Length: 498
Ligand SMILES: Cc1cc2nc3c(=O)[nH]c(=O)nc-3n(C[C@H](O)[C@H](O)[C@H](O)COP(=O)(O)OP(=O)(O)OC[C@H]3O[C@@H](n4cnc5c(N)ncnc54)[C@H](O)[C@@H]3O)c2cc1C
Image (tube, rainbow, N blue to C red; front, side, top):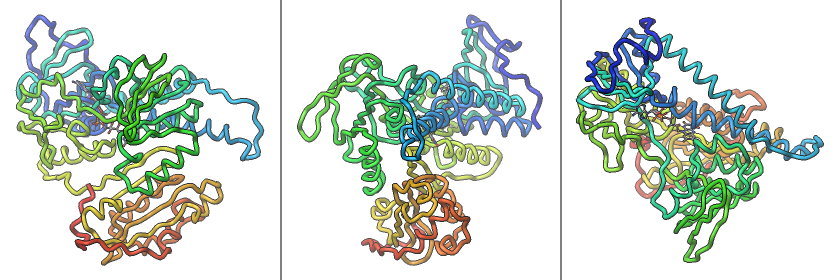
């Protein structure tokens, strides 16, 4: 166990009035931000007996439990309940009327968030890491000035400093966009009322999850994307299936859409002028949500003073050990340009912890599984067909509809498919994707097999409980694979999954 530090010492003895020069307080580890990787670093180093300070300006535990993954999944779950209520006749359940009380939906989410924050506070306390609420910036190498909520300041110097400040939603320089005061995911999770007509800019995973949830609460929803497909980096059959799902739910997707200008204000009336295939049209909505990319939180961090350089895209420049260009300064999570998932930020922590404690842990070549939490979900680990083809890797393709899975039949939720890429020259699984109920859980089972280096036949022949969705791996791997021969015929060993 770590030392028994007190929590949030914002009124502690070491504080200095803003007019004075604070004296530097010495720590083993100073951490900026308390997101996924950062908090694990704090708790672990703290529990190992190191003197640790974590500075967090707003969200204890970072974006995931407060304004991102978990509250959005809470909202999505409520939206799924709404969709069951809407479909109740299908289940033989009569209903009278349908009304969503959005402030009650929000309050349920708030209760969840508040419970999670309490757990985080307790974890900080148990670990002995000192959580300081305030805003941090470098003033010298490995030295951070913290401005506390009452404007007093503290100066903290770490033998090592870890930066995990995350990202925020991007606002493209579209005329009128900023003036329209669009919702980001933060405000979209705090709505009092169901938007009458929500226009979503961005057909990536954040935009799609919110689009479907709001539709299920009763909004009219239009999704705008500059690309020709939803989730355009995924295989075409995935994008097409998602498009079909959205069409069936009554969500309008305007693809290849260039936004020329926006007028009005979100929450009242917004007009979005778009051009598609050379034709201009105007969309009118009540609310606007931006979900078109992220910007790293590096502004006002004083990185210059610490010798920490940025990449051309504005992320903190790190090597494969997550070292920045300044000795003893490390970066984790989205601000380090890592793939934008909580589980990756957590894995960044593993690398930084190992490297600070004398190891040599690289982030190259790691698996990046992910799940889009629409209903049904889309999940993938390892190679997609598009990636395999781009890398010239020969593979066998196993593909089966969700209708082949008895559990899906039992639920009568048979939308979607599963597909697996298996190395053409061995039985090794190269990648797995699924669109369907519990796709994320099925993917994890395949991922474990991939980690263990099991041949696909091990899943085909395993005794899997009936009727589970994972049992669907039997029909998947029992199909006759199509053989895809790619020009370069690279051996699978050359694969990069990250
Ligand atoms: C709507 C939405 C849904 C998502 N859903 C998923 C999902 O289902 N699964 C998944 O894996 N990922 C999801 N993500 C991504 C996931 O939230 C992030 O990848 C994850 O939170 C990792 O973030 P991080 O470690 O980079 O830092 P963050 O969690 O962003 O934490 C950074 C922290 O640093 C603080 N900070 C910033 N600057 C300063 C400063 N100067 N001083 C003090 N503190 C500072 C911030 O307040 C913040 O709390 C979602 C993202 C969004 C937006």
